[in-house]
Amino acid sequence: TNTLLNMGLTVGKSTTCVFRHGECNIDIVNHGDDFTILGTNMDIQWVRKMLGAKYELKLRGVMGSPHNPGDTQEISVLNRIVRWNSHRIEYEADPRHAEIITSEFGLKGSKPVTTPGVKSTSPELAEPLGMREASQFRSLVARANYLAQDRMDLQYSVKELTRRMSCPDSDDWVPLKRLGRYLMGKPRVVLQYGNQHMSRYLDCWVDTDWAGCTRTRRSTSGGGLKLGTHTVKTWATTQATVALSSAEAEYYGLVKGSCQLLGLLSLLHDFGIKCMGRIHTDSSAAKGIASRTGLGKTRHIAVHLLWVQERLPNKDFELLKCKGTENPADL
Image (cartoon, rainbow, N blue to C red):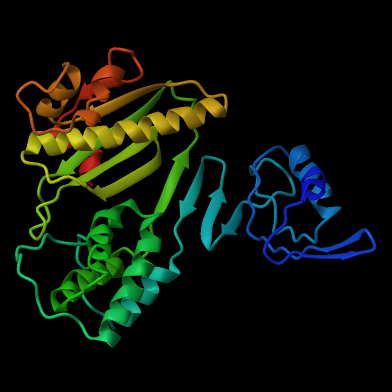
């Protein structure tokens, strides 16, 4: 094993080592696909040459600026479409999943809706689905969950659907079908990253939905990270703790955004990019909790979540107030 590590080889489960009279015959059968490399043309050609000397490679293409002759301006990465034109780079989610979801419900010709979901108002549990129907429900929700990785407009609705995958009931078909009707009107979404100068700030927008789940009374933390005008990360997650007030829920959402912000700031630092972090919230109560020291009158907040109060005086990031009508995290 030490010899193999010194040789720089990775031994997988399919490795076969045969020892005969002190000699080691090694048959390494590993398969990797869909590698994406970012760099200059010289760097890419160097990597191709070095890997090609030891492995069988198939180069799908080199995407580059329209000003570079010989480079293609559109490629597919795991069925996601990436385009590069003179003004911007475009990123489009795999459109096949939306087509499959709508076709499964037979929604061709149906009237689309303008929102991907509505909040449930009935806390009662309905009759569980049968084995066959539950399997179909899980299959469609899993497909929608894969699509929601690249479509921020679906993340909240799909997140609520995935919470019902373990034991779906007859009422869960309603929000799933509504999602399909929404996809009828918006089957494709393209993220556009226009040309811009390097931003000095990495902005994080946070918002919460207090006790949005009528069955568990749990809240949702939502938010997004923007580098200049470019949205680089979004999320919609169910809070682990049942918040007893909207201020508590908003603070938990702020803590979640702070984690995401510091993580991406660290990643940018590894890339040699230095910028400052800013968190935007529309909750004065959450901003007040984060800006002071200690619990105050909010005794029910866990102490281990108060680390944000230490980060703000250290100037690790800024905390700003925004209007609720102008908070993009409300999406």
